[in-house]
Length: 279
Image (tube, rainbow, N blue to C red; front, side, top):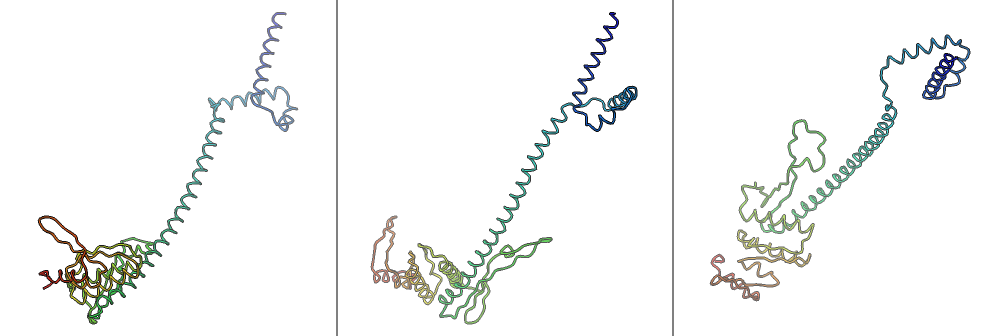
């Protein structure tokens, strides 16, 4: 009797273990249940032993694998989402750079054409008595080995000018100091015509100019001052500027002290004519 009770307890324990394993496996598909329903118990036990033997070959199973797979899958989706955002952001940045480069090129070329046009006009006025002509040009830079896709203003290396007097073209090294001064001033006034500035200071820009050029320059300054309402302060030792100025200030230096006084045009002309460089 005791032996039977022990066997009963052992069988109940096996039953409980089997039920536990079945619960861990989960719900068996109905197709499988119907397939094995007609199997004899002996055949089922043999099939079970084969299956258990096959499972033992897999060794230890990571029970956290499913959770880790889910976690890593979520991380992958998040990284993929961020990657897609970065790719779209890169496309947007490239489009913005392309648009800005296009605007930059248009602005630079528009400004250069405007300055070049006015440079021709201004220089002709400054050097009118010598039939002076000048123009601006863009120089292309040599292409680097293997360089591709260079467009717009990036193909240029700088700006140059050509000058002629009485229909004789002059190279840069052939220009006198006064002619170089006329070219530089023509560029300044050409830029001023494109983008007027309210205030200029010219510190003795006329020493190398002859009287005709000084007179033309003084007339140009007066024209720009009146037309563009720009204030020009010019330091000079020559009367041509004094004749065109609206107001005159005399600056003297004595005993290590500089003094400034307001004078009329006649006094200003008389003073500059008394200077050694005016004789």
